[in-house]
Image 1 (tube, rainbow, N blue to C red):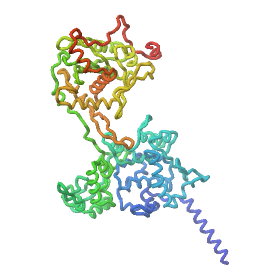
Image 2 (image 1 turned 30 degrees about the vertical axis):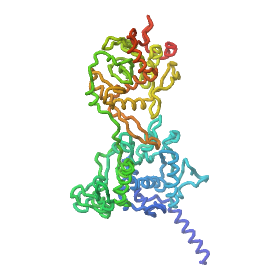
Image 3 (image 1 turned 180 degrees about the horizontal axis):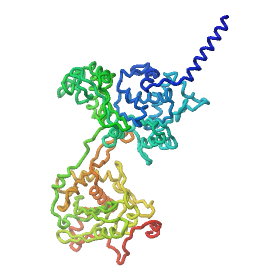
Image 4 (image 1 turned 90 degrees about the vertical axis):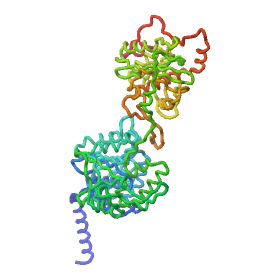
Length: 621
């Protein structure tokens, strides 16, 4: 056989062998096994080249759980520097190169998605030729490869971001990855993770949600709630001295320090049992050998299809304890411990908050059988609930000294006339001061923002001449307590927008005043302990919203009607803009004027009947 024929025959054999490989089923590999054979970490990372989970053994189990048929949800509440992004990339690559599956990738914003593509996903694909060969070429004819979607043999990867609900509609895939979930903006349609999870529901046992994030604030962290909902797995290591299994905690990191000096280079980890101090070599060895010695991931709760994992930066084999301690000291000096708690410890941050002591206010109660003579006028705030009205009657004297005279609960159905008639008997009654001066409620504000809105509109429109105002709260810093009214509602009722956070700032500041005089708040002896619990049911905390630090009010108890009613009463005062000092002067010096009157009802008025159905507009126009 001449040389040319021999070469042709060899070429044919190679072609046949290559063709045979295409028809062979892929080997049955777990995601971690496949990744160690196929995924190359791009140059520029700490350890480029084929991935080796021996450097981070805690990544192996969570990655394999993403392909476990008995598991449909994996939650990673991970710190920085422990490879959470790489773990997600390996799970996605496995569903491209080994087990082709359609998938959805979600990021907090379009900019975050672009950054992830350019710095994480695309470099990984370019570093892995076999993976790159599976994905359609950009601007090619055999598939799609753009900023919204990438197709490959057997599936596609679609992209979405939390600020755009339209990127989540009309899409479904069995595998969903949600990265940095605590940065997601909740939309009017719900939380983005829930929306995307629902998109995979029809795939049955094939469905899988992988959610990854460092946590943010206690009580509002999606990833912490998800972790608590799962089986709560933590990674255990063995003490190199006493062999006691334990998790690595920040409280056990020790270093030499005085009141003025710290030496991070002396940082060691202290065993929770024997008290021995580990250096970095012993800590890293304990992490790498944990599973080999029977430790590793241990769940606190029974597994019911949802595996949840927590891991802090102390488990990183690429970070020295000295570096972590230095980071802590820098964040503490910059008054930014929240970043260390969230990013390094993977724990939620809980603000102490500005809170008022309910017991101190309760002890300030004083007899108030009649309206004190120092009260120049009265205001009322009304909160509407499903089965009742809450009413506070508040007196105001010189220097805006406040007197909480009464807080009443009027039970009934707000859609019936009887309850509103009962409110009339309090709002339009004549009250009397200690010296016998008659006084009436000058203005009242009724909340229309939550319950029985149409009934509130109709009632306030009917009693507009008596200065009964419909209001709606508007949260946020810097908003005026009262704005110009709008009639953009079905009843064409004047509706006042109230800056509730501004009003609460003012009220909380007044509640802290301890000396009687301007701004001081008096409380009637008849107010019970529940009133003060409701009055102090919120605290102000600092939150990051869309990248900015903001002060917000958060409820620490379920009921806060007393606080709301006081806010509304003060809003009524702000709406009419009366000069209370001038009124007090006039009342003090006028011999023949001893009545502070509010507009009185016209004779023979028909009773108020809350509107229903189609008759609402015509009945109360």
